[in-house]
Structure formats: structure tokens, C-alpha cells
Image 1 (cartoon, rainbow, N blue to C red):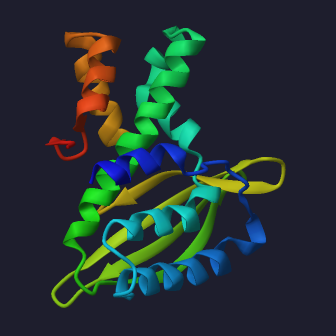
Image 2: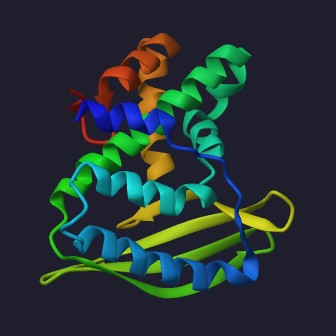
Length: 197
């Protein structure tokens, strides 16, 4: 498992974005590719999350996600602290995702619709389907890199990833400060309180 976490640092997270007119078809295509990766028995358990990150990294705005999750506290940090936080946040987010892949068991993800909620926001609605339940997802895009759009948040079952992190960071900053936040990011997945090994 340690190899996975080391490789997470090495994965290229440069964001290129998607043209607005191409978002729906891009996600439909990449959802299918993701399902093929998960179903492919020739790809190891450790390699699967890395293949998924290669697929989706280019249009996730990890830097903005990190800044939004820390809210006002982010602006009080110096440049070195900001850079450190973003790096730790991205690895923590990917680690949490990697751990959750362990619960995958033949679910499907289905594109529902895309909608322009205002001139600067585009949401893609999808559903994770399994035998007993359906779980709604919303991928939230904002314009970046000129005419291209990037994902800045994901709602799962109506719960925003960014809001979840923000709530936890807010509690920690009030009780212990920024140093404690970085220590927690280094040692645990805040999303599910699982200690990284």
C-alpha cells in the first residue's frame, strides 16, 4: 500500500479542462473507461486507482478544491504553507478515494444530465447503481484556463466533498490551529478517519 501513496505524489495533476460543449460526452466516455478499468482482472488492485487518476486528473481543479476546503484560513498562510497544504490535501483526497475503491463490487455509473446552472457553473448529474440502491452524484464545474472547465467539487448523496473537509478543517483550526491540520493530513484520511499505513 505504501507504493500507492508514494506514486500519488508522482502522478501528474496538471489541469487542462474540458470545453463546455464537450463536458457531457467526455464524462460519458470516461465513465465507461473507468468501469472497464475496475472490471479488468488483469489490472492489479494497487494499479487501478492510478489508472483512474490518469483518466480524470486533467479536469479536476485540485488546487481550488484545497483552497475552498480551508476557506478563510488559506489566505492567512504564507506561500510555503499554502503549497504544503495543497500537496497534502491532494494526496489525502486521493488516498481516501483509493481506500473506498476497496468497497467496489460491480456497481455501474450512469450519466443522467448536464446543466448550466449559471454562466459560470455547469453541473453533471450521474448515478452510481448497484443491485439494491442508487447513489446520486453531482460533478460541479467552473470555467478555468480560458474557455475550458474544471471540476471544483463533487456532491455524493447530496453531501459536498468540499463542505465535508471544510467543516473538519474549521473544527481543527479553532481547537488546535493549522499545524494540527497538516499533521492530520499527513497521518489520516480525514474523510473516513482511517489511519494511512
